[in-house]
Image (cartoon, rainbow, N blue to C red; front, side, top):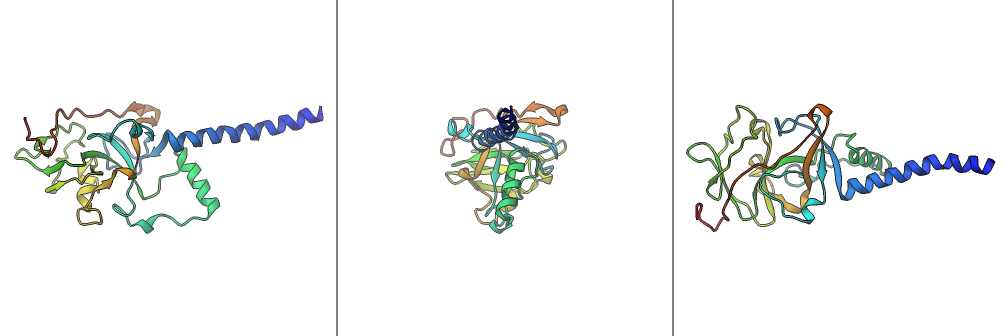
Length: 227
C-alpha cells in the first residue's frame, strides 16, 4: 500500500510535467499564443486579443501578401539591445508564460500585415489615394474605419527575402513606413517571421478566424499591370 501511495503521489507532478512539455513543444514548433499589445491592427485585432500563431505554415508555403504575421523586429523596428537581460530562471519563467500567452510578448515582437513581398514595388498612393503593388491598387476593406491607406507617401522596391508590412490601423501603426530611415529601410527579413496569425481565441466573444484578403491578381514587378 505504501509503495502504491508513493507512486500515486508522483503520478501528479509527472503528469503535469509531461503535459507542460507537450504544450511547450507544440508552442515551439507548431502553434503559439500571442497577446495583442497595441491598437495598430484594429479593428482586425483588438488590444488584449489572444491569437494563435501558426509556426509551421511557412514550411509548406511562401509568405503571401495579406498575411497577418508575428515577427521579431529587433535590429530593425527596435534596437537589438532592447531585448531584456534576464537571469536563466526568470528567462525560463517568462518564456513559459509567453508560450502560453499569459505574459505580454517582448517589445521586439510585432504583428502586422504583409503588403509587399520580395521583388514587389509598393507605392503610396495613386490618384484615388490607394496603395498599389506593382501598379495594382489594393482593396483594403480591413482598414480601421475612417483611416486613409496612408498619409505618408512612399515608393519602395522590396528586396528579395524581405517584406513590407503595415498595420490595419494606419494612423496608429509604427510600421515599415516609420522605419524607412532605420537600419534595413523598414523591411523585415522573412526569416524573422515567427508565423501567421490564424485565429482569435480570447476573449470568447471575439472567437474567429483571421481571413486572408482578396487582392486579386497582382503581377510581378517585371510584368506590366493588366498583362
